[in-house]
Length: 380
Image 1 (cartoon, rainbow, N blue to C red):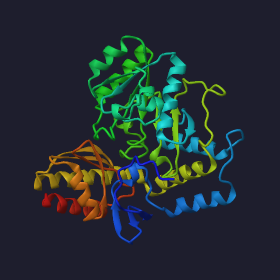
Image 2: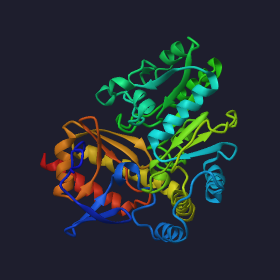
Image 3: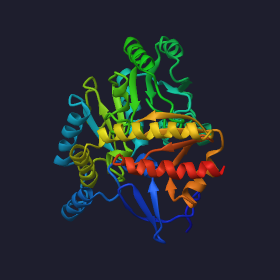
Image 4: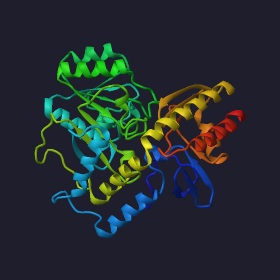
């Protein structure tokens, strides 16, 4: 049997990681400014994380959601406290797509509606509902294309209010900082206006914090920069530092019903242990504040580089979620960064480098990246 070949791959076999560095099977070291799609939040192979997971695995790896799991209770309490949502409820699943699926289902169960408003260039996952609210026809199969979704421009409040006024919108789903869409940022005026309009017309506001949240923006959630409080918040990626996990933070307005939602693996003992270890490190090492401070430093240095090199058209983002807009295709830049400068970055569109390092990135590592990027850009 062969692998189902759906991923274009760099010819590199990563076998080890530590902090913001990874190594391939030939011993070559790489600076990791991508964190495996923004998944690595506390750094690769953090010793506390390894110790906690190893200890839990030696006790119990998994049992079903038909019995009490006090690790889930502890995680809900601590996540509520650290995020500022201690009055909300937590439903645990395995991935970001599942988080968005369940958030959309909850909204529809609650108000009985079917239509969803989503943002142009949105990415919310690849499963049934999640891919339908994703603005990429290439990955929407006919069976997913059910006419439930209207895509609207980011920050065009008037367009959103017109659709909401029709009275049939179940939910609005929003990445406050778009990931795959290109690190485009919602404005405070738009976010607050949208929240008010949702309340006026009986629509639920879902903030997809899967990539931009969990400390990456320099606050626990990106929407907290905008002064809003969504009805439903979806998380994944950084919640487990690489262990597959997702969750939905659910407002007190939603009353749980037995059997309404469910999952086999969600919230298992190992996953909860991983998530608790992440919160330990966040608190002990101040990683959310570090993301803010080092992120601001990195963007300042990138803007300084922009003055020296005309290939950079724009630098945008918050914290350690940064988009570098180029006047050339990102493909050759990324290739040179990886194969010549030994540095991983992400991308968006055809001309944007997406920078999503572990939240423990240091200023020295940021300087190291700037030097490697400048070397590449000066060659092109």
